[in-house]
View 1 (cartoon, rainbow, N blue to C red):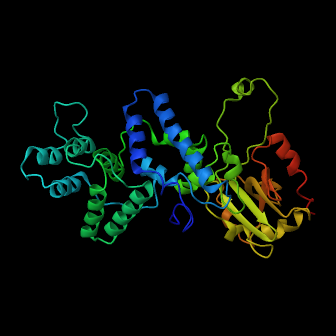
View 2 (view 1 turned 90 degrees about the vertical axis):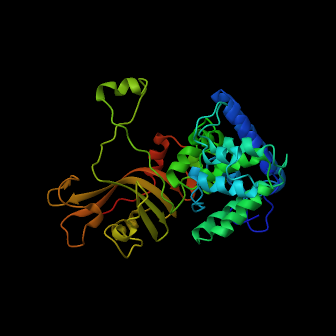
View 3 (view 1 turned 135 degrees about the horizontal axis):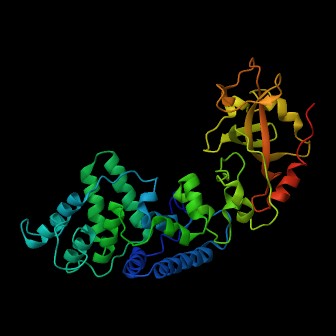
Length: 400
């Protein structure tokens, strides 16, 4: 395996699964007319991958092997790790004409070069991959012999050689891929390279089938590899994995509601009302004497508020407010500027920035905490708000 998917030397599922298996699955998904059928075919493929994974790794908690190797081929636009391939349809067309020794002005070469022109047969016009398949199926091996891992390795080398402008090496890698795969595999390989899969199902749906929280986690961290590792187990929820000490998460935001409809929206059950504070939404991560502050968009403001009890506009003043049995915690709240003379909070529009308050300012930085997500390594994302509020009351001693 490679470090990208599985530790070096560790066996990976991707090294054992033939690329052809993935391609036949994608072909079935594309040919299915109904959404639920498409999802089921993909779901079955993922489930068999997970079964193979648990047989291979015996629930080893240290394994970094995951579905990522296949996922990056199924939703190529979501991939951030590989650089651009620098390959368009025209380059592939010339390469195929070259590799297959097609007469330059013959009907098949023209088909590839003018793939956008309408044809009488269904579904091939404008789709280069289908057109290539049509030309290739008479000329290629009926079955390729590459694993999913090998295909990823080749695509890595294509991307690396493209970045270092070594076009001949790009061509060599592609040649290798082409000569070792069947027409069906090449049809899907072309779609992966062009990053246009034509599956008839959205990229978000693919993530959804993998795990109900995968699309949400991908929106937070845009890291497909992490999504596949952290949500490998379908029964683990996002609230359990996304909340980690010193790692910013996207907090829950409030929707704008009409006051007249609130009771109805709450199903006429009891609900909480909290004062909306007009400051900066900030999360505080504390572990002993180490503090970090993040905005709701994951920008870090530790420099301003203080990374330790000895620095910043806030940390020195609050460090002793934590009860001595609180080793670490994550708090969610609103950072406000307080005017002690007027005994009021400043409103956000009034020509000051709470993130830049200086020591000599007459305003004080004040963190209004309204939620707690972790205390002493215990994750609270699954607890009710009522319970989290009760826990919040046990964290502080009053500041004089």
